[in-house]
Structure formats: structure tokens, C-alpha cells
Image (cartoon, rainbow, N blue to C red; front, side, top):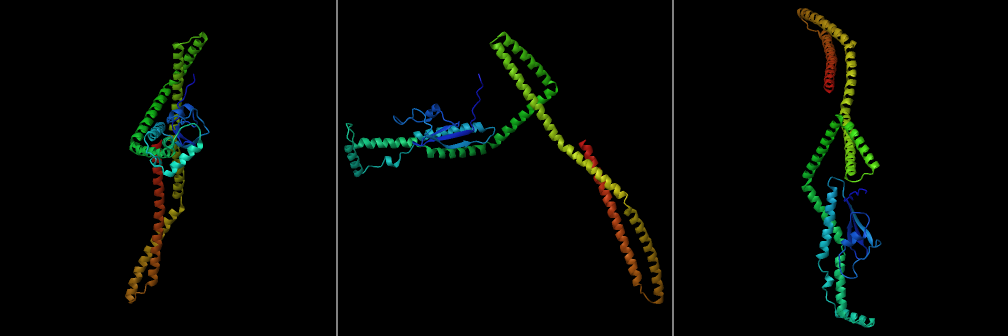
Length: 369
């Protein structure tokens, strides 16, 4: 006997009768005679349907609840509420204004004239016609649920929204606990597979298949064959879950390891570039040239300073202090020496930074490895 799957309850369909404005609800996109008749109220003779006429029932609206762990429960709750509220509208309603409106004398006279013109042997007076018309009004009030259906749908959605806000934390905690349980079960199955669980299951499945084939050859029926079939089914299901868990754990490990591998490759590339740059800085001739030139400028500055001091003493004896050219040359040498020292310090600082970055990268690689 084939297994009958449970029908999804996330989609709710509403149909409306184009003649009576009755509304029925269904969990399936098609209507069935038995389910429709159970929802229709009994309003007396000549008002109930004996057989479903699909040409009279047109779609009114369709509600599709988003997929979630509680979508089916939410759909069933909505379906139940809609049917309960429609039943409430059918048994508890306010009389229409025309039902209590008194008939005027001219309307009564028109009805009497219509009765006289009708003829026939049926004895009926005006008040019988009025009573029949008021009965039709009450029946139409009970049957016409089109506007109520739309209002009920809005009300139940508002109610579920408020309920969702109240139970959001609880549902989130339940979903997290469910995910943790599934994750733990998958890790357990993967560990069991690593310990040889798949091979054991394959052996058990093969043995059960042999037993089932033997039972089929012997024509055995009853609980023994049924038990073997159930054990074989359970073993196949467990093997499928175990294999799925192994694959999922392997993919998760690859995904976790991939960023580290990419980072490691990037760091190694940075090390290579840093080593090349450090070597280039160490072999840079500007460092030696700047140091030599700075020393030469320093020596020239000292010699010039000695000459300037001697010249100032000599000029002082002669009674004059005009040493502007000498002071200007001395200031030029000082400025040049400052520039050379600054350039040398800059190159040395860059080399230190590159060496520090190289050490940091090497430390990070050691941590990853």
C-alpha cells in the first residue's frame, strides 16, 4: 500500500458562490463535494446544494504562509479560525434594516393587485408574501459571507502577528535548540562512520537483503517478513543519514579551512615581497653615499668653522666684522648636512618597518601552521 503523504497546510484557498455569496475554505486548490457540503449551513428547503457545481464557485482569495518551522501549524490555526468565525457569523448576526421596515399602504395594495392578477387555486394573502420575503432576507443575510471572509482574514493575520511578537524569543530558542540537536546528531553519526559504522551497516544491509530474498523464495508471509523489511528499511535510512552527515562534516571542515589556506598563501606572498624590498634597501647605494657625503660635509663644516673663528679674530683686531659671505657659506653647509641626515634616517626607518612587518607576518604564519 503506498504511503500517503500529509497534505501541506501552508496554503489556504477561499471560494465564493457567485449567486448566494457563500464562502468556503479549502486547503487544496480544488473543491470536493463532501468537504464543501460539510461547510454549508442548513437554511431550510430549496436553499441547500445537493451537488457541487464548480461553475458557481469562483476563487475569492488565496493565502500563502511563508515557509518556516511553524508554517503548517500557523496554516492550520488560520484555517480553523476562519471556519469558526464564519460559523459565528452564520449563527450570530444583526437583522438587516429592511427586515424591520413597515410596509406602506401603497406597497400592500400593489401586492394585493398582483395576487388578484396571478390567479390560480392557491390561497395566499399579502401577509404570507411579506413573511416569505422576510424569510428570504434572513437566509440571504446568513449566506452572504463575502465581506465577512475578507474581514476575518485580516483579523486572523493581525492576531497571528501579535502572537508572533509574543512568542518570537521562544520560537527562536526552539529553532536554535533544534539546530543544535541536529548538529550534534550529525557529528555523532560522522564519528560513528569514522569508526567503521558505514562498513558495519553495509554488512548488516547485505545480510538483511539475503534474509528477505530467502523469505520471498520460500513464500513466507507474516510478522517475520514484515520485521525483516522494517529492519532493512531502518538500516538503509540510517546509512543514508550517516553518509549525509559525513559529507556535511567534510564540507564544513573544508569551508573552515579555506580562509586559513587563503590567508597563509597571502602571507607567504607578502613575505617574499618584504624580503625582496629589505634586500633592496640593504643593497641601496644611497645609504653609503649619504653617510659618506654627510661625513664630508661635516668635516668641511668643522674646517670652515675653524677658519671662520680665525677670520673673525683677525677682523676684530683690524676693527671690522664683515663676514657675511663666510656666514652664508657656513649656513649652506649646515642646511645640506641636515638634509643628508634626514634622508639617511628616512631610509633606515623604512628598512626597520619592513623588517618589523616581516617578523609579524612570520609570527602569524607560525600561529596558522
